Length: 51
Image 1: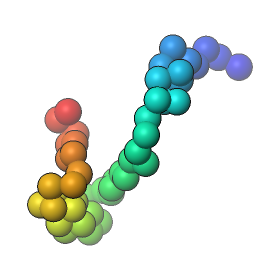
Image 2: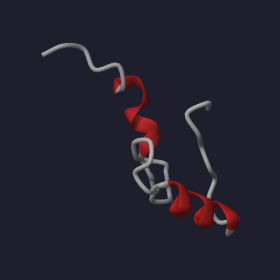
Image 3: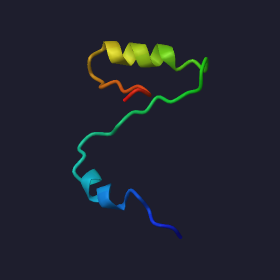
Image 4: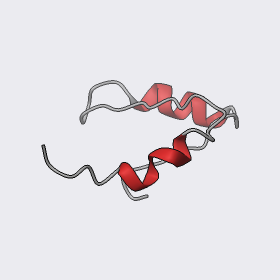
């Protein structure tokens, strides 16, 4: 097998105390409404493709 580029960061995942939620979808797949709704609650940190 090849070298895993994530190996140097794996130990940092053990310190994560939350469970991330990812909303992923193709153009016009219906992900915009859940994304906007969850973002407006202020309980989520939105990330876009530009991040």
